[in-house]
Length: 536
Image (cartoon, rainbow, N blue to C red; front, side, top):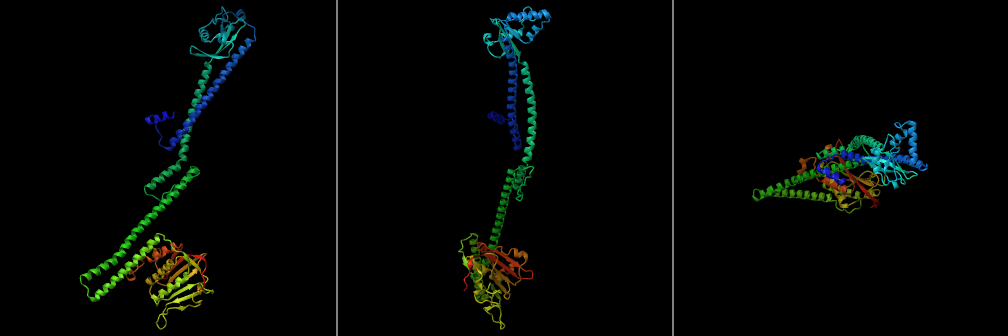
């Protein structure tokens, strides 16, 4: 059956539904139709059997009554004669009864005869046809009721043997049974058709309502394919949705969010890469153009002795600048590859003091203060640099409330990190202060415990600070708040990017605070190592 249906669909005699709603409705109606057909067949068969059993019971009661009555063919004729004498030959009630009941009398040779000889109702054609269609009369009398077909009609008959061997056959027409079965079939067919129509309408409506969230998913997918990556599948309501559709919508939204995030990150990374290449090319092109220009002037002999010395100094400076830029680019590339750092307990306060001493040596006139936790409540302070009254630079001095030397770090936990990387972080921060602030601006370096299991390094200067929009971009690669001073400072705008990459490699955090009245503070928060430092 399935193969035939498939062939009809392929040949085009039966339209294939394109929507899921149509297929679901057709499948539901088909299953219910099969069930109704089976139920109708069962009910018709049961009704037919009940009616046949009632007819058989009636026939068997007649057979039983005659079997318990000692009557023969002569007695039946006498009964007919008595009925004729009482009611007249033309109005023989008994003869008419025998005629209506399809009673057929068969002699021992199986020939039909009249029930009442000489009556006005002899054997008719129907009785003769029924007698001709009967099986062996000798076996019919001892058997139960059987169905006989004669002249296109069906009868339920039973045989009764009289005392003299005559067989009386009583039959009942089955046309009434067939008529009742036909009417029942028509009623069940009409009711089934109405039920199937109602079921189809109800199934189509329910399918449209239940599949509405899937239509929303299709619309969302179409919108996303057109470029609207922010589009999401609406959450199905309790009226139109179900648990599976809700799970599907949630999973699709999560997937779409991940796809949008990945594409956004990819676009941002691509834009950053393009900007990085453009900035790197620009940074390298300027010193290379300068070097090439001086070399061309030197080759053509257009420089005198003094100009040659100045040209060589400029070429050396530009080469140093390019070398520093390449070193910074290589450092960022290594950090982007997430190198395996050698983590261990590091004394961050010691690194801060050493970096502060280096800054004081480079700029003796800049006041530099290092603050670390001390034994007392006031803490410990170390001052580097600053101008003396006689104008000479002071290399080192104790601040008020100083605990002295390196003993101030005994309450400070060690930092878990790579010593070379941490040294570069502190050095870049102080180098950023040295380059971008006036030489007399004071700077404070503070190392203190922060929160639970963390150490914070803070570098604060009293310089001009940054605008809010510049503070948000301070960690971008090749960003410079004052691009016009790049040639004077020699920086490429990669120092703070390296600081951020190193801090992230140490699983830390970095941020900036710029005060409206001036000044800038850079906070670096790093995880602490287990245990305390040993006092020196």
